[in-house]
Image (cartoon, rainbow, N blue to C red; front, side, top):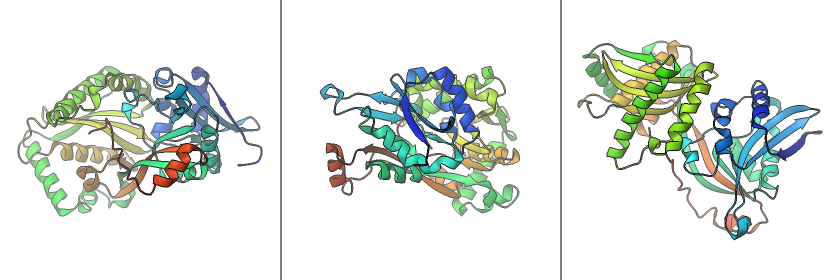
Amino acid sequence: MEDGVRITLSVPDFLALGAEWRALEEASEHSFFQSWTWVGCEAEARFADPVLLRADRDGETLALALANRTHGWLGGWLGRTLWLGESGDPALDSIYVERNGPLLACRATALLPALLRALLGTGWGRRLRLAGVDSAHLAAARAAGMVRLRASHPSPWLDFAALAPGEGGFLARLGANTRAQLRRSDRAYAAAGPIRVDRAETLAEAAAYLDALAALHQATWTARGKPGAFAAPAFLAFHRALLARALPRGELDLLRVAAGDRAIGYLYNFRHRGRVLAYQSGFDYATAERRQKPGLTCHHAAIQAARRDGASAYDFLAGAARYKTSLANATDTLHWLEVVPRRSVRGVVYRTVETMRPATEGLKGKGS
């Protein structure tokens, strides 16, 4: 730990915390999911028993993290858990956080193991749950305690800097089969009129696009025998609130991709420091003809629009869906894990079984 750094845990004043969090964002390299736009959305409901971690030195805040506390069986003694950036309630957590972690000032990244150790060792959270964290957080967790790795998933993304200029630069790096399918699909849709991307400009328009996206998304996933992301009322409620926070700040795009007057599908993307995050989608598969691939055509149109707007990357977020790996040219890995004290009963058990147990916990509620 750096000299003079103090780490404290307390119950937050959410109103005051928002201003402090925004100030630290300016000194931090962070993801959209670590911003106050996301973390602070519906915070009072999602963090019903909150724990705020703060690291400071000489009155300067170096790190902030918000967790929720839950209690388990035997009076809670064996189930006291801190959920970093989550509630511990599956319905509330169906919003699916990724690229999670404490908000850290750029010059304080070395504090990460100490921060996780502080969360783990308070007596409140004898288990610490980390969802959607990168490999640096996994390494820090292993330095802080004993880790049970519950899942690891690829997170494919498209690095625009690696593409040659113009539309041909993107198409040239695709596999032959993907390129042929995309061209056929675009031609088939363009027969009804030019393919265009409409961006919601007002909250009312964004809400209408979100409703249309949800209807298409649910129709697709229920037809496959799956519940779909919007099956949980808390999911839609969160995103209605998020619209009002993120749209005025230019951090959110709701896009309608159409050919002439025909809607092909809708995309719900976040925008963060030049990066476009493809968070959710709804495509019209019901009326698609044989050569028409609504998902490919919609993402292709959105990628073109993002490049024209000067974005640096198009991030497909976690999951190994074929369209993601086909369109991406780079991949990160995100992890879902649990940390416990090394000398605890669970620590001994996890140390015994960690190398024997596969990571089987899959993506929940984020079908696209």
